[in-house]
Length: 81
Image: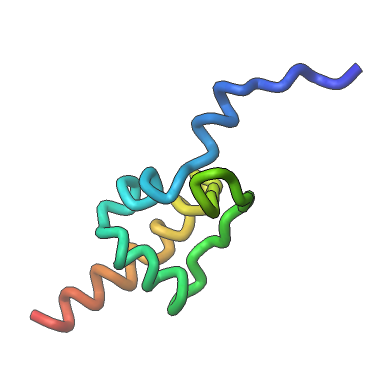
């Protein structure tokens, strides 16, 4: 018999675009640029509803990306000073 789904865990793992922006501590336009220019994680789920396109991201993938980029960002800031 399969294990029951832990919906609370899933809710913590799935992020809306607004939640991704908040987690990153960036502006929405910055996150949109990262999606175009870097290896930013792709949404794990996309669907069209009454309000238009909805995309959802994996929190663990976004956090892992931020950890990888943190070194680049810190070095980049140091070089610019």
